[in-house]
Length: 217
Image (tube, rainbow, N blue to C red; front, side, top):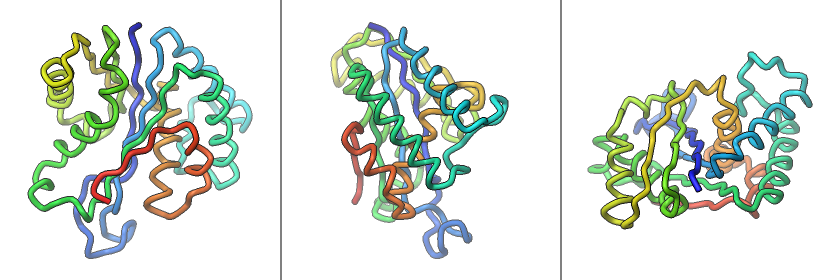
């Protein structure tokens, strides 16, 4: 069955570690989270996001990002995500995080290669049996500037290393109008905050249903 993958990242791809993060320095961690769903079940994600907006009386024209949520709101959303995934066993929720300070110097020259590698290591195994996959990323993300290089890299991995015939399509989208990207923004932030800020409440809530990977830890 064709699938959709919604993907987002938290943290940055800078390498300035002589100053604190948020005070002149780069983030110490980068997290990419994703959800893989059957193509015909995107309505489930749409309904979920709309229900969260309605619960908190958020104007739909506003992008309700996790970075603007207080702790109690995040906890509520994380618990609802847990229920959603448990109710949809054909959904795959995952994340991969890198400890940037431990990334070797020669790997820092082209940060997009690290970004592409992280996606390959985390996502490809979950889509290799699908005939066609739509990869949906935030159009405003600086990583999208890598253009087709990311998709070409992933497509080559699928065809020549994994040995599948999966067709991968890139669909950069506007996050404020795409419920799937709004949803995965929440997940990415919850996982990233566990590493970057040692704020682990939501991470622990999601741990039973998320495929969590780490690089260079």
